[in-house]
Image (cartoon, rainbow, N blue to C red; front, side, top):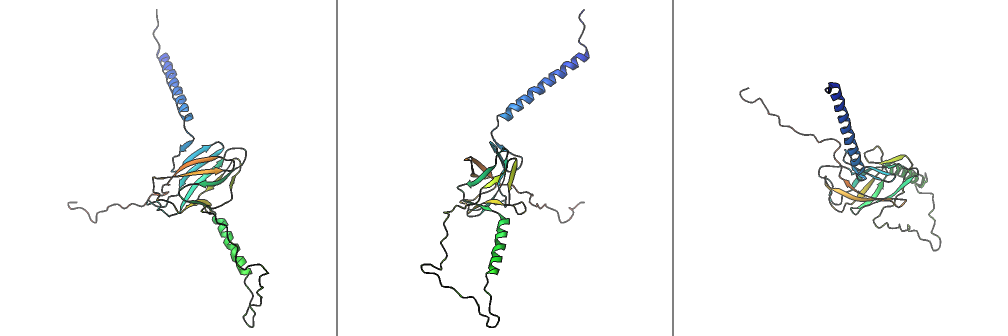
Length: 238
């Protein structure tokens, strides 16, 4: 006599079937993740890019207004550079055809301004207390010398700055939104740049690595205030 299949047996079979389906789904997801490119779109406005040990995060053009940037404006960039390797990496430059890329360091600028102010105060000539005239004598230039300042080398539109070094297992944040934060600035944009547009740049590292990227214009950190219609008085009949 053939016995019927018990309820417990049916439940166990259903559980095994569900577990098998879940495992198949997870393996399919893993295959999908493995096939993704190294350019990742994060939940925030910025773009993430991995290239070997170099991890670029939150790449974007800073948001200023809904109107964006007009041609001739300056646009700040925001990025994080992480080093996931065992040797230091150095960012030497950022290249773009949209304008001249410069490096802005507010802390260094403030220190230079203070140093210049101190040097100016120490070099001021002392005046004679009785006559009010300076007691220092002006020396004539030596033979063949000139009193004119030496000419400054032209940079031909390219601004030089020290390479940015990132130690192993470390990162650098370049963001003008951070307190006294240094950042890259694209000066004199060649054309307008509106929200929804992208800016093509190439990151050049000391080991010869070049990482191209399309940087989106960032979104506002806080939504703009909205005005809602409010009737002046209660409607008739209420």
